[in-house]
Image: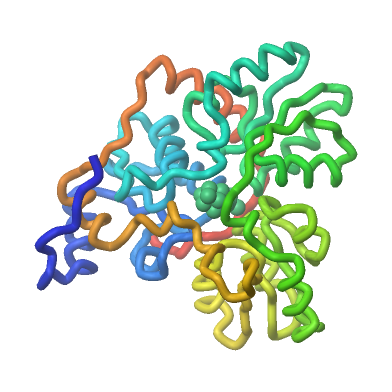
Length: 328
Ligand code: 13P
Ligand code: SF4
């Protein structure tokens, strides 16, 4: 059950989190879509691949995972001996929700000559039904290693799958899931914004639909977008992904301007991930204090899911991300 933040007034949450982090021998991992106050006190901020690698390698006794449930479950699959807590257990993902394991199993059974290459944004059960997991930063490296004649099912994100199909000339069968956050960007509003800033390049996450990605100068994972922001000339960048990543850009490049790509009415908050937003400093404090809500996974299921994650980590070796804030 998710801890309820009550009676915490008067507490210096940052100091308390710091104290508990040491007491519990905990590491705080945070995704780029977390609120700035969480990113700022995390030991490590990164994309899905980097966070998986950190979770697999850490010698901490507790992992406080500030992200969504599939990410915390990945940490538990890779580090079963650790206590893994997620500040809010309701922090899910629309892509995971779009892909119920029984329906995915039936789809696989209909295509026995296909392997399942599956986006990490899915349940542990779907990982256990898959052959190789990919993240947005490892998908291209991994797909390039799979022979062109091999038939592939790609799920659950049809936009990432479609982008990979177009880029690599593949015809992977796509599961029809979408990210509600990236789906909400408006092409009309993006073009209006671009007209106001004609020299600003557009960087987009591959979870965006084709009508957004087609206008992008760069397409890549959250870390990829951050690296692109650092490498590209010019003082303004249009960012078509969840806007909390702009916090890291502003920290690293205070002289540049970063503009979040607009949603349908040009000014909505529809591109803020409602699941990521459930985590708060209060809930993180309670999670460290009470060591709950905890991620628990049945051992047989964990071992099955680990096979497809291990395949990803092996096939993605050499894929470099960016996200280390320099703390141990
Ligand atoms: P990244 O792996 O690029 O960080 O993406 C995670 C995610 O959920 C994007 O919506
Ligand atoms: Fe899932 Fe989209 Fe939120 Fe990422 S941004 S966690 S894909 S709902």
